[in-house]
Length: 417
Ligand SMILES: [Cu+2]
Image 1: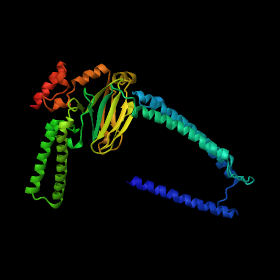
Image 2: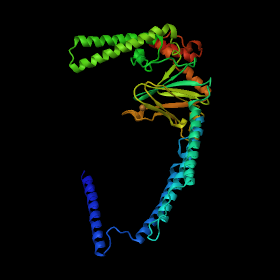
Image 3: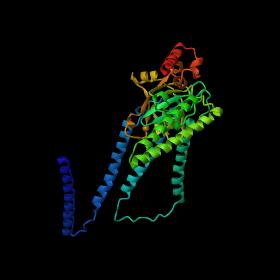
Image 4: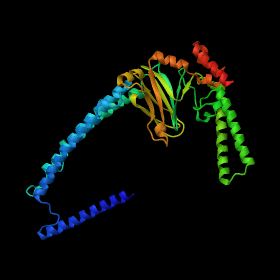
């Protein structure tokens, strides 16, 4: 505290001293019979030289920082197919920017030095040069067209990839402050989901709002119970005006939710809603296979997040109410990357790259890239959404004869009883 006051005092006194010194210089100049702010030729030359000298410092700093911080090895190692192109694009951009920066700075400083004020020199009038204007319009335009064109090609690589029938579709779901992932099962289709179907109740556990005939019935029952509770609060308690208003709002919302769930129920005959049964929902760590196209479908429950996989050069906003997507192919397994980096506990991460609230920093998920056969083994061990719902629902485990899987479903069945 005292240190801060002292610091402010020192700064104020320094400013005051500077003002007084300037006044003294003015008076001294007047006494010598000169104009107070007249700049002499030697001062002018000295300033011009200093400008030139600052160019040496600036360029030196530029090369030093470039060497220290911008080097392909200082980037996180790339682990995706399109990432190679993204990194190349970054390097090309840096080269072009560096050349443009250096040329502009050299020209700026050199002209300031060369055309410093000189009493004997008269400025020449130069109004227009078509040739010069053409050069400085066409040259940057060509460079920008090249950069933007190359950027668009790389962008289209992952946004509009050739349709790969063997792609693996994964839904990435964000909410404050965690990620969930949902794998499309054997049918390669994610079951439909809607926010009105979200239930955090342990017995209805449906945090992503997946729609199946069972979840519809459970959600309807849960919503009706909640509506009854709101009604009884409105009827039998004597809340204050504010609380009363809040309860009325909750009641309106709950009724809207029930209406939506009933709409889903009415569609069951046509839509079936069975693709969600073989989906696999994961919260902490997910495994993905190497060398296979991964299609990410990204959704958000609350605010805008950004799904950022730095090693795969993937980043996409996760926006409430809009599904965004990204496609990539992982090319290095976690095990290979650990050997390559010499870090035995290295893991790929999914991070949130958009400040979304107080615990934003902790919003992450571990991604493990496996060889395809290892990934298959991991996938087969997972409990499907259908199996977690009820013991008798059809899901891929019913057709799978792997012993461990049957055990898993059975244990789940017992847990559900
Ligand atoms: Cu976030």
